[in-house]
Length: 76
Image (cartoon, rainbow, N blue to C red; front, side, top):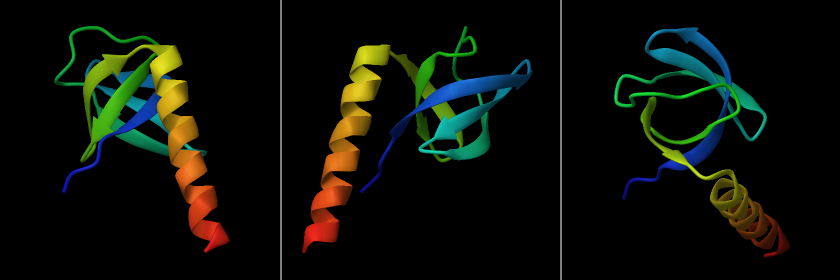
């Protein structure tokens, strides 16, 4: 099973790369598969590549669901 996660672009580091914030973890990823992104955009990330941009509201909703699932794991 593959999992792609929403992450916020924190910094553009080159024409095809950026630093993302993924739940407080900062990581450099490739933007080679996307035409245009900007700092503050949310992207779906899998295996170090941004696959597509994502609406901020949808990204925040998805991140909230992940946080809820993580909290439920801690309850068991």
